[in-house]
Image (cartoon, rainbow, N blue to C red; front, side, top):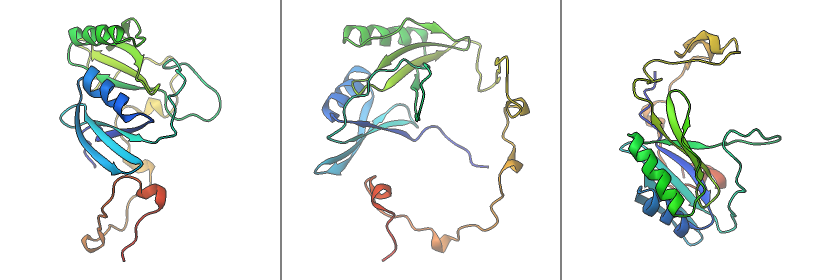
Length: 196
């Protein structure tokens, strides 16, 4: 089974990379560790942790999203509600709340979700963000907790992956066919590059 080691990167979008750098690097304190791009195109990466990154494409015609409160239901096509970033201590959560407030960003009260305490805000692009700290003694990764009062049948199967629910791989990609193409991040939009 594949062993995941975190979120390599979340890729989001901005129309103003400089303002985005000011927020993510200078206000939140995430290092700017990589930048791809050329004329009219940028893809920059900020270090969230030793294994996780946050990335932004800069597209010139992008406008900030209208703010939608995290978790508030919507209708129609929709794909993303918010992203939560973990912090180590309760003190760091309060420090972030103060920094966001002083910098002029709307930030919620601290909310107790039982296993995490969280604050909610928005980045300059209108991206809904949450910051969370684990409640001491409540680690849902070690002790999964389901408190849904009306769970689905699939949910009741438990927290562990069930391997026979999808077709098994019968033919593996041979080493001689494993080709890695160079790219800056726009190749999928422009079409996959084929061997010459």
